[in-house]
Amino acid sequence: MVHAEEVADTVTPAPAAPAVQASQKQLRLGFDISRIARNVLSDKVHGYELSADYYFKKELYFAAEAGFGSSTVNYPVLRYNSDNFFVQAGIDKALFPRKRPNDWSLAFVGLRYGVAVVKRGAAAYNTDDGLGNKTSGTIPSDYFSLHWLELSGGMKLELFRGVFAGWTVRSKFALNQKSVGDLKPEGIAGFGAAEKNLAFDFNFYISYALRWSGGRK
Image (cartoon, rainbow, N blue to C red; front, top):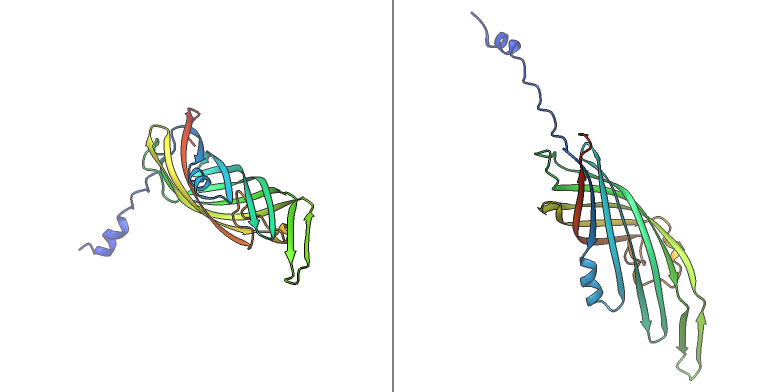
């Protein structure tokens, strides 16, 4: 009599199906359209941002963003403008395996290192001690750089062949926040509010993918 344990021992598990590999190479270029809405609605902060990612292998992407912006501080006692540009780079990792070789939609998590170079314009100030003693003057312009690490996550959906829409949420951790100084910009393009070490951001991109044959990875 054959025991169930003996039968189970003779059954060989089926090998796992190999991971589906991408059929082409891809470079995706995007523009953050949410910045246009913010530029219209805000009279203090303006900016533009571009994105790019390149498929490497095993659902891993090299990714980068760059852009520029400006902000205005305009109080009765203090006025100044700031301009900056930024760049950040890192990796995105798809959360789920692709279903087909030409399936490029994905949910992802990412890691970035970023840096912004900021020029603060001359700041005009005036004070009144309430006793008729008024003081006014100008603080010279200044430059500084802000560095940060970023954790991000989001989705990119292929709407039509090569055309994507997608969103990204970002949490940023400043590495040298003290370099901002006392006269902080209203906002720094690429980072956000400069008052704290931690900042959050949201992007909504429209992207287009360039694809070409180059073997499977």
